[in-house]
Image 1 (cartoon, rainbow, N blue to C red):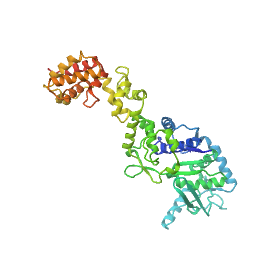
Image 2 (cartoon, helix red, strand yellow):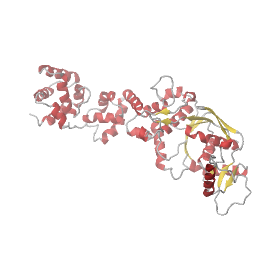
Image 3 (cartoon, rainbow, N blue to C red):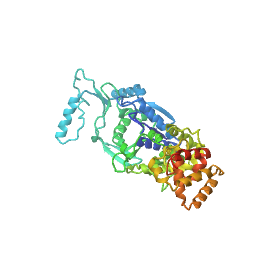
Image 4 (tube, rainbow, N blue to C red):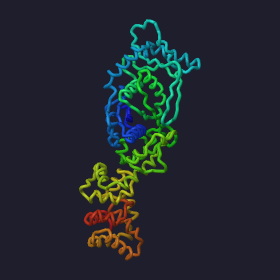
Length: 462
């Protein structure tokens, strides 16, 4: 059975690259009716935090990437790692190294001066020297001295690394704490991981991990190293490219299915298909279609995709999502037109939930237009027309069609073009110059609120 894992380090938020890796691992497991495991690799005690753990869990939950097992925490598995290290020591496949930092730094300087690649020289590998007193040794893995490691990568193809390129990896620090590369090996072994899908920044670790697995007599998973995500300028993706926390996208008003759809297309493709749901993605997904080249992150494309999803999302759901944004803007959706009807009117015009909330504000509290806009649109010529319109609005049947007919009749009576009356009216009742059709806006605002706002804004005009 297929078993995949997502194994982030809790040293920060769940970022775009991590989310895409999680998505690919999740989709591969789902495609093959397998198991998706979440593992938190928290051995970096200085940088790991519970806050980051929670950010990862929140991000996975918001995206809907449900895991079948876990979360497992490496810090809770220390006894197991030490047990395996003792096994390797007992079998002569690992050894204590007493080289000090000063020794290693001197070695590094000598190698660089000689034009050699800096690496540990295995001085303690088979040493019979008496260990120096007071030194806490690290434990190193005895990497094979001959041959090579062949990785038949499911994305990159065959990769061959000579063992002469690999030094003897430290698998436990001087204080006895196991290192990242060793913990990963034991975890993948114990958890029966069949496919390791991860970023290609881990490719250099893979031959080392394979050699440890072989030394343990453990089965080897298949590896799929996914190319990195770059910014639009070809540089490593960073915050300046818009690569923020996954949860920041929620705060900015993106829909999780839009972000997932975008991540799915970031380095993977199914023909020319642009928009598809998660179920369709799982059905289509395969590792062969992952690009061998880095993908470029395009915030504008993501924004467009989010707009497409908002347009087709049920207004009742959008109403629930928009409510916190409205509350933050001092609006109470209970005091005004039904939020769903407002959303029906606005959702074709916005890119995010946040924009939807901003566009809906004037339905729930008056906005005061700027003096400059008032001076531009409420001219001496138009003021009496507004006064007449105000009187007629008090009597007209209150629906969009009747309001539209009334506006056109007033425009015709005064020989004006429609915008000459629609723009000032829009400004008076919404405080803005860009809104949906003014008759539709008035219908939702209601007669009483519309007349009240016109009166308030026209109070200083004769």
